[in-house]
Length: 402
Image 1 (spheres, rainbow, N blue to C red):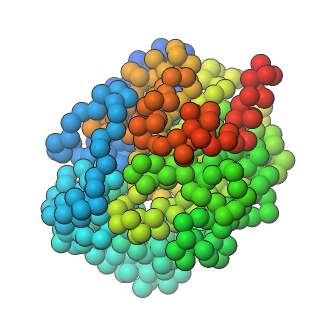
Image 2: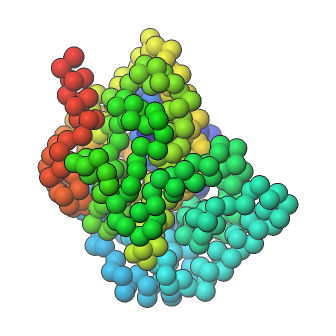
């Protein structure tokens, strides 16, 4: 399921400040909208993620129009040149948002920030050896993600990074990392495709009831990754067809483990691809909102409430452990009325400088999505060339029941 909204810090009636973004935004009119808490939280969660990883206030970045075409990709040579000269948080943030931040050519300024974070981490590990990070978690690329999420403030990034090492220990994420790497020797040995995406015995069963697509569905392995035009990983989520009763039958504990496994795999893939291409890559997520319940449901069954509680707890961990992984979120197939209502909501919640990270659409979204992603990496349902996966069968089946 899509992550729920992180708890904002209240400032006054009708306004909040997010953890990482210091612009106060007015949300007092939200109470008049006929969208329930889950619907609002879903939209606000994506908005908060956009604000968390956006350019600092001082950056001179043109405001994005609603659903405007994406900016042109930054070429490899230009990325290296601009990254090597980056000397301010604004320089780094602008490159990050354009997927132009080089992982090969770091400026002395950026390397100094990375070294400062690593120094704090090394001090924590010297006191508690069990916090020693994995090879990938200790890499410059992963530390750059923490810096980006903290507006390139080394002290704040170091605090969050050390906290993430404690969370990784508590949740057994390094053991998941070892399992994923062991089952994907080809990919982590330099091949383009993943060897295995169903890591656990319950993985396939959970994919049937909480489906997501990030590989070519035409093969049962090796698995070709879906990529956008910049090289980012493409992930398709259909949040309206998550079957909480079926998840409960498998077990919420296995579901939580699967959720952590997918996110560990996703970020391991992003870091590996970033090393190969020399730019910090991100995730381009399509959230299909078909059948999402945007109206209040006071009679929701207990199993659904338990499922959402498990999703919330898991999402809070992944947001801390895997920062700066979002390039863009497309929310598609909302009803026309909800899409129109969401527009003002996004303008209220997301600073203009980060509006380009979040795109809200009704059923007419394919042309905009194709600006970012080639047809070879999209299902036929989205005007692409790939067969529709199981999630679209679930969408159709749910539509027939109605």
